[in-house]
Figure 1 (tube, rainbow, N blue to C red):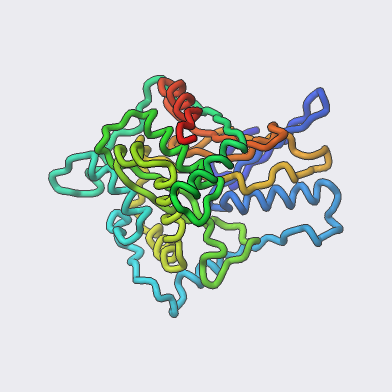
Figure 2 (tube, rainbow, N blue to C red):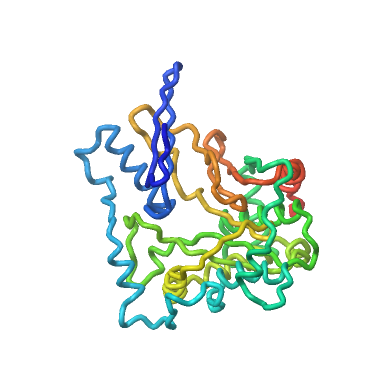
Length: 338
């Protein structure tokens, strides 16, 4: 399959001698986010199976960006004005951007305190040995135990699977990289804005509707604090994603000088556990496995359901330097909180 530079989405179907099939799929975030992509796959499976005459279970996609643009640029919007021409480095009222660009400013001494100068000097991911994609596993029972302990010990009102896995992955990756104790680090994760925006976009909106929530602290604080305190940070970051935050975030992205460096201090966690791949049926039977083949951003960890585990379980697909693979596996499997 030849891939063009301007391809919005790609798909490839392979039939194996055993009678099985695989479907490869990739899409641009300019076209849709993870939720939009899964809704596309679900509709494709629905029609492929031969259920196109039954529209009761078919989600009609909404490709229009009008509702999103109207919500962001409404004259009645109470959000603080953000100049589209302003440098993205100056958007210090948006936590995700402030945290992201605060890391290189701390890590790199810059005489003129210029964002662009600091980012240009900032070192990239250590290339020694190359990047390796690792798949980590955790049993459902372990996650449930950690959730119960976090609620009890941290006096939390709730705790989700994402909260536990996100906190644990962040701790394991930071410990593996061996950063200095006083180094400022950052965790970011996408939050779906469809229901948080006013007016809501609707579940069938196919565009890119996520914004990044952000947590930052020092390496020392992260590795010394109990799991439930890290989870509390994550929950607070999610609560910060309000209608006003979303609109400010979207406006800030119009800046022309966006630069997203690879940073060991940054960890991104994307939640794909919400996507019921097992329910997809293209007419050849239920999906037996789903996996991320590659990650465009080395810092990103993808959380997924383990479809091959009968009792349930979870997978974490993450990129890490080849020299760090062994330590990452050990740190992730060391659930010393129990």
